[in-house]
Picture 1: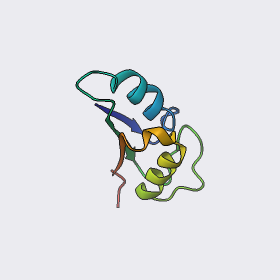
Picture 2: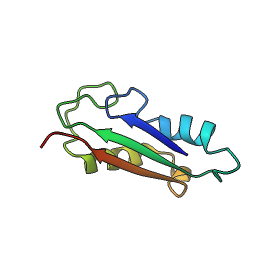
Picture 3: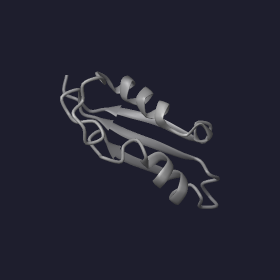
Length: 87
C-alpha cells in the first residue's frame, strides 16, 4: 500500500501511522507493510501546514518524517520523498 502527501498537508507527520498503517496496511495482501511518499516542493512551501523555517531539502524532510514516526513502524513502512522542486 502507498500513502502520498504533499509537504504542506496538515497530516504530513501523522498519516504514516494513522492512515497507511492503521487503515491500509492491515489488508491481508499488504502484510502490515507500506510505502509513505511525500512530495517536496521546496523550502518556500509550508511543511505540515506551518511556515517552514528549518527544512531545506527533500532529504531533510525525509529525516524529519522518520524522526516523528512511531519506532514500531520503521521496519514496516518505507519513507520516500520525491523532490519536485524547481531547480
